[in-house]
Image (cartoon, rainbow, N blue to C red; front, top):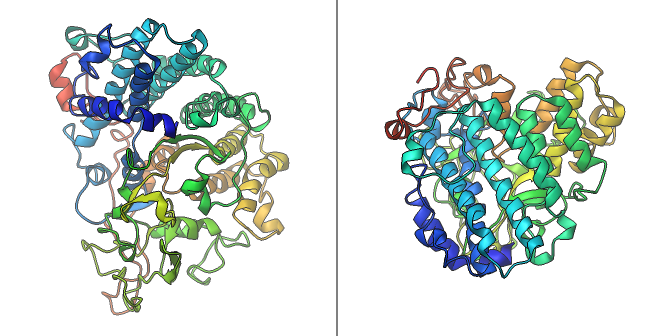
Length: 543
């Protein structure tokens, strides 16, 4: 798919530019020429529209901004739209509420345009045409699923509409939309190739395994545990929908040279020079030539990583030594080692009393609102040290960003089995133990074996395992919302490292608490701009 994206890059970028600059109303057309009968004359042109839909399905920025909505990351520099949401002061005019709505419906518009016109392309085999339709149906299902996850009831239609029709739409019940999403994903899973059935040039295309995994995730968010188990078992216990496994090295899982490894079920595709992302420039250490630190990992996230021996970290333990290796692969902390793009290793110094390495910019915590870390921590995940992964020596990266990994399938399966009171040693060993073995936990009973048969105790363990395995991948906020723990977790005062000396001795950095209204914030506001366009759109409670 990387090669395909490069091949169609000029058409894609033109089309995407037109769409992204104008996708405010539900009737926006991706570009006029895409609805012209004379356009649909070749497979290449059809594929350019499909590639545009891939681009509209998700974006790199959301992965990072979604973390700010959670307890994993604190936004200390400036005020983002997500910080306004996290502090409970966002109203229906918040740009994030509007952008997610309009971007999704812009993508749905592209999908409908494709489905309405693809049969005009005669120079294309029926098999290829059916496969491309299945890909676009997956994208449309994912977009509707994202919409209803954030907003609840939303306008729903499966054919292209005009301006007048868009103004007459009502919100359709979430349950009906989700039933349709599940049916679509079930159907396209039977039509799409598995990852092994694609040629190398098609790496990155949506597979049957992706349809199964997304269906499992959608059922997970509905607490439909039996269906989660049913879909996960298709990927864990068989190869009909593709063969998946855990990649051996957690840190290098997120490096360009390994981006098509057999743990990746679905990822956002990027192409050197033509389509890159540069979000890390505001998250990695300043010494690594970052621009600033927009947001940093919290002490709460750091504390969630166990000791290598399987015990919970306590204040009697060293701050960072002998910990779950996923912590060091995810978070840059005081004393951790950073590899620059020339292959040189140097220490990250974030403690206020630390000594900055010679020739490096300071990463030290200097207080709230500064360009350095607000928490004492920086991002490491996604920071591939390979120079060829970037353009021009900066942070414009061509790394594909994982959307669904096999590790998530194992975690979904473990959670569902526990909620069904079916967790046992065999399931534990098939799921959590495998993740801990990959992370290098000690080969002891405490570190690797099922710690209890109590459902409540196991629930805490599995949820924490999910947090550390998937940290900084944009999924934590969805978990807090579906567990209905956001009202508790997101109203607690977050902390940074033990770097605050305002009282005379070092204590944890105290950060402002968030706000989450359980009667309002489990759904987002229907954007004010959309309700002005269509007065039939009712508002969610509290806005």
